[in-house]
Image 1 (cartoon, rainbow, N blue to C red):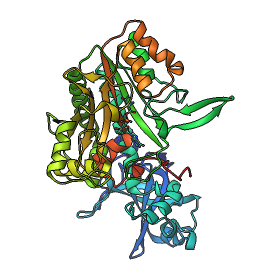
Image 2 (spheres, rainbow, N blue to C red):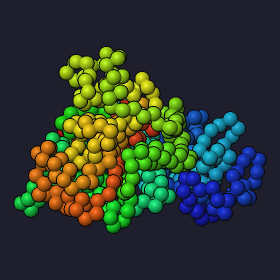
Image 3 (tube, rainbow, N blue to C red):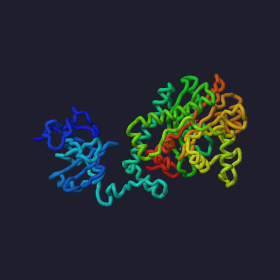
Image 4 (spheres, rainbow, N blue to C red):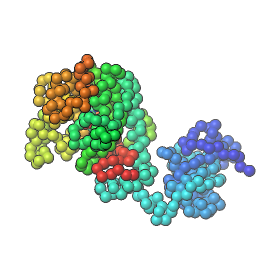
Length: 462
Ligand code: 4AD
């Protein structure tokens, strides 16, 4: 009788659990009989030997079925995604062969836990792995099968890196002593303009899904000091672009008693720290290297460019605005023009001092030029804007005037206005779209690839 097998993970390396790897010519005296569980990633047959790549989460193990085991019915019909238990001893991979952790499991027994279908319904037939999001048809078909396409290598790697990046933000803020809070998603005020609000009936009252937690973060400065959150934000975007979602992950922070320069310095430090912390995770670093081989941490200091100079830059190159005319001061810099600029300059750009009338109501005016605000967008090559931030109006009367100018009823904002009544302070903050950050780090065609189950105009399934 064979010894009882020990259940191990696919990445277990502790000799107390796995014994010593066997190799040709040894007597197997120091080997341990191990048991692994997972789904079949790939099967290949070679001279009566069946190679089975078993996957569990992001880990894989190469397993070999030989002799009678390879001739069993279960082995003959084995297909991708079948869930299996395999038992045997771990061997060193022969010289010249490659396998995860340079080892392979030589099975003496295996058992099907749950079979996956073959034929027309086989995973490999139904769920092609080529992931070309650049054609909308392919992209829609793949997203209808998102629950299955997520099992492919690239999408799972992107989701893994997303988790590492999110943790990096938490760690970076922990290092800085900034406290995390969790503002509500159901709100009755707008932040970034009425045109992208998702409204809903809230027990007979009008309510919205939040566009940004900023206003709530501002209310926390007097009680907790600097704060941040990582929450979902919602935008009823009515266009289909490579970087707009209806639901996205928003990293937002608010910092008290700062200047605009402090805000810019903070953003530069934060982004660089998050990149470093992400690359310190070997699995994330490997995935970034694989899908974006040219990725380099952003060079410091970030280039700073005023909005007015960006308008000049666009004019000099004959890049037109959305109406097809030369850009003039006061124009919104649309996505296409912004991409052209970021791709040509090809480095991180902090675009600052946007005119007040193209930005949100709460932004503080610049002391040296009343037409513009102390605002910043951070632009990254390949994506464009990943951050929007600003200093906030902190004078009571100025805020009331801003509501009026924007045609906002101040009544539902009473709690926001009160911050200016009970001890105001110069303060500012920003919002960063996590999916856009990922699209930049991993060179994704669209932010949809950076979502577990993307939501954008027309899609709310699966
Ligand atoms: O520039 P936005 O609209 O700024 C705000 O919401 C501020 N209230 C944030 C703050 O200061 N606390 O959005 C900030 C960032 C953008 O730079 C972009 O990265 C992301 O949020 N974003 C989107 N990402 C995906 N899909 C959308 N529809 C997005 N809208 C904004």
